[in-house]
Image (cartoon, rainbow, N blue to C red; front, side):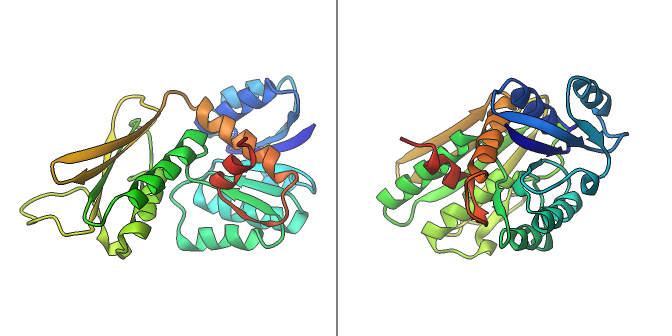
Length: 264
């Protein structure tokens, strides 16, 4: 059995990972970590009655050979990455909204242990990245790229980390600096500059997540779209990543590496 320490166990993603892991035959949630007053903590505590340990302190439960899965906060992600490196535990990190210092802490941990870092653990999103790459490679320069993402009203960061990752991937083809990404448009902004990428965030209701890429040329356009119907899609990807890191060498990996390892 692969021992899992779940950070952010009381959150929406934590509960989805917990539920799917308990239904597997090769994974065991050895410990769950979250604040006792976190929204959903009561539900998380109920899940623990059958197995595992509940703790508010990651340092009290992480040990060598564990796989730590974290969907938490940037500060917690940074601290957990350091603990994993210190104790020899692999890390699967899915917290969004990380600052450069947080990203640096995760990459530092990857020098000592295997780390899979992703803003979105959907294997479908990994395939969407490949599709975007293929389409942009097939087209001449001059096509416009716009990204629209839709999420539930409770999502804290905007635009989504996935939308930003898609925008940066498009930039690599367009050869534009990060200043070429705009977040929505308002007022008399003038003609659309060549190579600009618009990223638009929609928030409302209970929608799990949707990302749409519009690639527009003269007289035609192409749409690439991914819809997550349930958080189980992200949970399944996180658990696939957990299996991946058990045999991976220390290093920094993306979800595309996990997809490649599991493709025929």
